[in-house]
Amino acid sequence: MLEGLFAFLFQFGDAFAFLVLSASGLAIIFGMMGVINLAHGEFIMCGAYVTVTAAQAGLPLPLAIACGSLAAGIIGIILERAIINRLFNRPLDTIVATWGISLIATQGTLILLGSTMPGVGTPLGSFSVGDYSFSEYRVVLMAIAVLLMGGLYLLFHRTRYGILARATIQVPHMASALGVNTKVVHSLTFGLGAAMAGLAGGLYAPTMTLVPTMGTAFIVESFVTVVVGGADVFLGTAPAALILAFIKSGMTGLYGQLFGLIGLLLTVIVVIRIMPRGLSGWLLRGRE
Amino acid sequence: MQIQGLRSGYGGKPVLQGIDLEVGKGEIVAVIGRNGVGKSTLMRALMGLLPATAGQILIDDKDVTQVSPHKRARMGIGYIPQGRDVFPRMTVAENLAVGETLLKPGTSPDYDRIYQYFPVLKERASQRAGTLSGGQQQQLAIARVLVGRPNIILLDEPSEGIQPNIVQDIARNVRDLNRELGLTVLFVEQNLDMIMLLAQHCFVIDKGQIVARLSAEDLNDPDAVRRYLAL
Image (cartoon, rainbow over all chains, first blue to last red; front, side):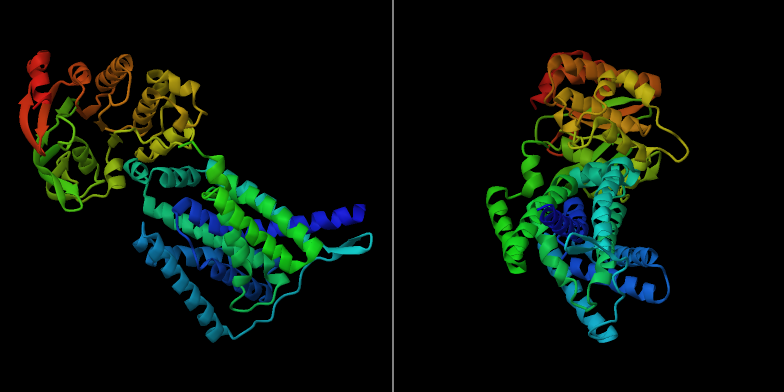
């Protein structure tokens, strides 16, 4: 009984970590800039490839993951300066542009690096509770997901950048009339979102096969989480990930992986119907 | 601040048709007129939020007509828009912190002084700005630019949506700021009380042009001012 409960909790935590880590970058870029970034999966792929390359070059894994995140962030800033900021306030055009970036990145990686790349093994060992055995690395990922949410909260509420970024999304013209260079804020915010995507890629790289299309493995879950959560990272993404993780791990445990995904998609349909602006839009209704 | 032949508008629709006016250091100058004659447009153009299609804006004899809003703000202009535009989901203290961006390098904000002028903001420092009353939001919007120690403030209809007794408080506060800090004030307004309480002299705007200039003596006669507002 207790073993079964632990197994369920582990699956739940694992699903939660995956949803939070894969969605946070997308949520930051959507929530803080209003940009729907269809190249999100490719920033994840970039983080994973750089992480594995750095690890194979001899860097310890945590440092390699940091490199992957940083690389994705820098590429994000460059793309924002070169392309995204020219499409400011044109959300549909941004979707097409980021989709184009996504195709170029996938095919470019395929041409340059081939269809697959040797990975690194999953670090740490496993532990067992009763008859079941669990990966320790997955527990680390859960802890990182929770720490990441806390860290992002501090970043957006306790730092100068965070206050200016929130001012910029709330009343853009007033922020610039108060001396805030909103272009720089947008570049940094896009870079931060890309770095978070790269972090997700780096963290999951040891658990996956590295192929140029690996980003798609994250895309469904990350978009589902952001759609259910709405525009606010803390009031949206975090609670959405909790609810979705519960549904996904419950359905997967009872009926198998396919039904886990079906459960996620059904939840999205129901949530959009009842709360068009997502959980955070619903929680914040009547404010502003 | 000197404005010469300024033209501006929204998407090719001209609103300002060649504005000429001048604001001296330490003055409190009003631009008055009815609804829809271009008062707010003038403020937005002065701040750089609307591009000027012709004319010049000079601040301390420097041409800032093509300078972007955030750089213009950092030259010492504090803008308090119509409707206040506080950051609704940020606390009062966070709103004020955004104003620090205007500070010249090496200077630090003087919150004690600001809370002296606006004690209610200290009481509500951790409250979300969107939940404040109209008058409190107005005070916050003024305090937010004062944090950055501007030389000139642009006030867009400070009386709008505010109870008459608070209008007096705000007028007194702005006069004190002008006297004690040497702050230059340019405001647009159609509320007679606010104009009479605050302005040292004023310009009348109609159909995007300055049509009259009223001296301090003219401002002592409410009926004369009322006539211009009914123009």
